Length: 185
Image (cartoon, rainbow, N blue to C red; front, side):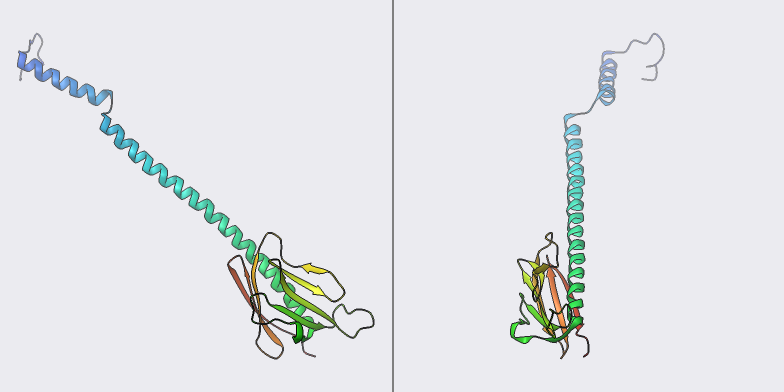
């Protein structure tokens, strides 16, 4: 083998066979992949692709959930602000029509805001109507406080004192709580 690369060398049949097998091996390494290598590469590619696709789908769903929660929070804060204005403007709780400590609660208040002509006071009801928070003033139509885009699951009013209330509002699995007091007489 020492004289293998000299000019005019003629290999013996054994040497020719060794050279031929080495050339075939070198050609195979240069020219392509074996079937097993292709299958392994394809498997790795499929695993990586499915991981990337799963992560992307998860991210899109998470983004949608965050947007829905944000919308729920915004609507809940808006509803609580409207309720707080009504409670603060009230002079007393009208107990005969109020439904306290219930998921479909109603808060009826006696108020001096927007009083009909000739009356010393009026009434306002805050309640749940068709998965929306609604306000009904005496002599007026029902006003929907929350957007049609969200669904109010429960509206609970709890009395926490002589003139204060805790309001628990659940909008699409997002719970908001707040405590409000009526104004002093």
